[in-house]
Image (cartoon, rainbow, N blue to C red; front, side, top):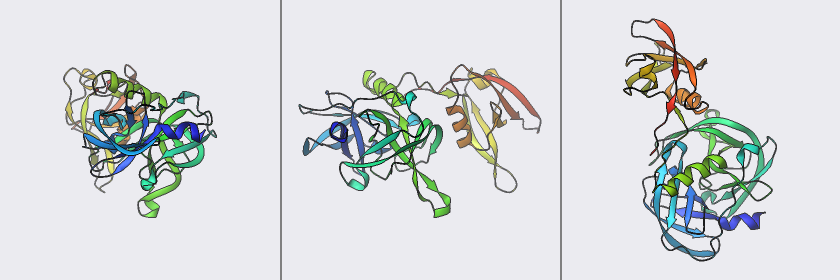
Length: 302
């Protein structure tokens, strides 16, 4: 299985770092993480069949799902596209391998299991990356280290079922990675977003992500603790505006799930669908609490 898949995993180098990628097709399109490409538009790529670095350029990125596609300027013959599996069929306990270039160690393979599915995880902002909230993420015990990002999470049938993206950070260990807890973007999301980027000149017309149609910021209580999400702006004619939510309101729950920060709001929305009608608890500037029903819109594409 390793021999089948590893030739489809590449190393991507930018001016500020390196990561991994997975070959989409024999035309030279490669999917990776948006945080791997960062602000770069040109790259050096090494494939398993050719140790010589090849030039590539950015096709497009979609930061809300932390995905991007780059294209080899002169694709060599013999590129081996990966076979993507159906991530909806994953079960807890399935054995998986993570393939990539951790710490620049080309073609490394680690093993583990699917620890959980359907996680909504928030990825912090970093150099060239605004951060992202990833819906339906796969949790795995396979080791994920810097450089693994954008690579392949593979099942025992040699199908790519996810793209490793981040490791959990443990506050108890001073902000270092928590061993045995990593997350991958499911292959069904990867093929959808990457396919849209390739087919639409680097754009994503259909995000399939729910949105309230607001600009939001976390508010804190008198003890400095997160206490809700303040509405700074409302998209005219958008879902929140149609439900009567106004700038200055503070959202404290969505779909009966408490939200104390903008990150928590993003995680709740990540588990919902456009068109879904959900209750939203709001406190107005006078301190009056009310519940409104919002029919969710769609997060804008790119």
